Image (cartoon, rainbow, N blue to C red):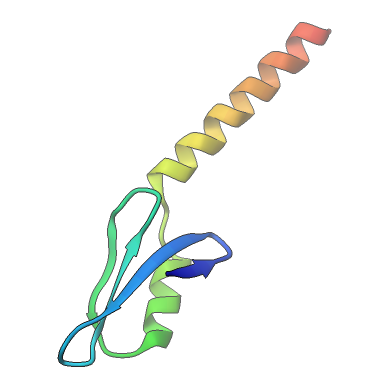
Length: 71
């Protein structure tokens, strides 16, 4: 398992030495048959996880509702 500042990923190495990466929040395959781990870093950094985006949106909505209820 690999932890990135933007999420958590599962990296596996194929028999031919290439790598795969999967987002553990949305289970989307981020990279498949990539030859260098540095390329995985780039692809994972650019992954826009829909599960995390939805969670952030809902958290902002709850915060706005709580703020409105106090005022």
